[in-house]
Image 1 (cartoon, rainbow, N blue to C red):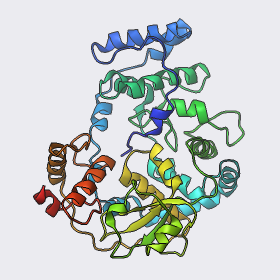
Image 2: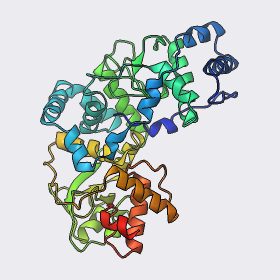
Image 3: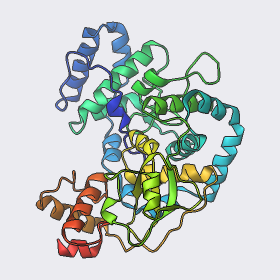
Image 4: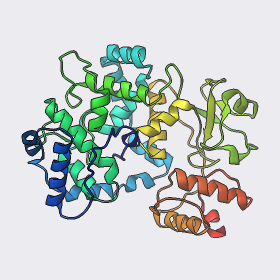
Length: 389
């Protein structure tokens, strides 16, 4: 279920001078990586030991191309991930690690709800951290020519962890995309933000919840998390709102949105913060006001639906009410969404890959097309829009 995090693109580090090309013979690719590592100053014997267990893993490539869960509408996706058991477990974990979360809030300003939400969604609170060999996953994805620049630097970060005694190339396992531990961090993330939260002298994100949570909090702060500020509130919006102003492209202060009739369901609205109105299923569905910290979460995961679900779950863990589902217009099936993306692309919109997923690019294109067609521009694709295009 894990979707490759955007922060990986921000934390890749400096690439070695001799970049091994992707594709071609896998054994030759490994030989190029070894030469690259030695040229970068790593001991040749260490390099041989590090790369010896590596195997190309077809299951990694299959997982990389099969992420259909993100085609679900927001409310369906949220109901799938947020069970009463997961909510109760999250609150229990918050109490069990109360001192750790207090320390994180003091040192990094990150709210416990956010870390609990990602801990829950990434690994079910550490219960399942992935069983892919991490090094083989990284090398397989670097060899694959879809996103080699994203994964190749992570191989050398893993090599540094190996030299430090914190990575076993034969036994270290995790997610298909190379993330390790309870909150799923890539090797470079661990190098940059790993914290010994339990004081045992080691950073162990797989076995130590304090280490994983402290490291996650530190990483979010470095990614721009603003201490003491909210990230999301559920709101009600007036029927006469200019729907073209909703989404991540139009920013106003909370006070400006309030003057336009936006109201927080729990009475909390950050008046002075810049904010966006989010309608994940259009004007008939649930509505949220999102603040700058919400955008930071996109650097944990690129999926709009995943991030919004995690952000909403975090508010629930901190006492927010159950969202109002509303009565949204029926969405499109996967095949219809692909047809819509093809039509939008034919009209000159950049929707990225035609994959049937309502991502940020497709949402922006839908909203623009709706506005040009004189429809309610709430960025929610409907059969009517598909027909009119």
